[in-house]
Structure formats: C-alpha cells, structure tokens
Length: 163
Image (cartoon, rainbow, N blue to C red; front, side, top):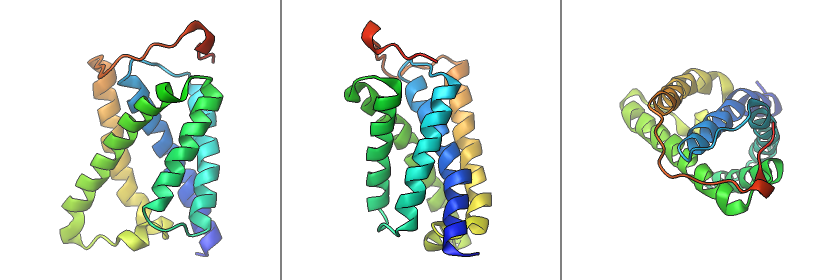
C-alpha cells in the first residue's frame, strides 16, 4: 500500500475515532457533556490535520505536539470556550489515551511490536488499535455509568456549547 493511502486510512480509521474517545473521556471527567455533532466535526477536522502531519513525515514525538496544538485550537474555535477550559479536559483525555497506549506497548514488547511499522502500515496497526479503542471505550462507559467527575469546569453563559 502506498504512503498516501496508508496515511489516509490511518487518519480516517484511527485518528478520527481516537479524538472522539479522547474528547468524550476528557470532557466527561470534567463534567461537560458535548453534543455528538460537535465531537464529530472536531474529530473530522483533526483527522485532516493528522493526515497532513503524518503525510509530511513529521518526526516521532513532534507529531504528537502538533496534533495536540491543532486539536486544542479546533476545540476552542468550534466549542467557543476559553482555551484554558479546553486545555484541561484535553490534557486529561490525552493523558488517559497515552497511558493506555504505553501500557499496551509494554505488554506487547514480548510479542515483537514494531512501533515504526505502526505509524506507517494501516493493516498492521488496525487490529492492535482496535484493542486500545475497546479499552478506552470501556473506560468511557465506566466514567459515564459511575458519574465520575475528576474536576468540574463551568461554562459561562457567553461560552454555552450549542449543538
């Protein structure tokens, strides 16, 4: 599979749902329920940025920083909330996602997990990422069912998130 197609598939089927899960977990833990339509628009825009960042072969590690900054800007603009109110839930969501990824990587070291191949080979990456998504989805449902709030962030009247 060529680089363009691989990058397109990774951004559509991996980056897009990952952003949805990061936002649902992070904002959920801050007591903010986001409209599905807004989450979908934000995730779609971020998938476009992820595609660009991956397609130009941004160095490993730096791509995370670029994607975090672009996602933060997209959230702030789309939801019309202050950047600090977007940063905290985003950091929480990204932290949980990264922690799950790191645990997954450590557990798979003995199964010869090829990190370089995961960033560039959709067919190699997809089955491994589906397990990660199942874990993140489970975390989201545990948070939702138990009404777990890590910190409460209030949204002012001038920042009301509309569907």
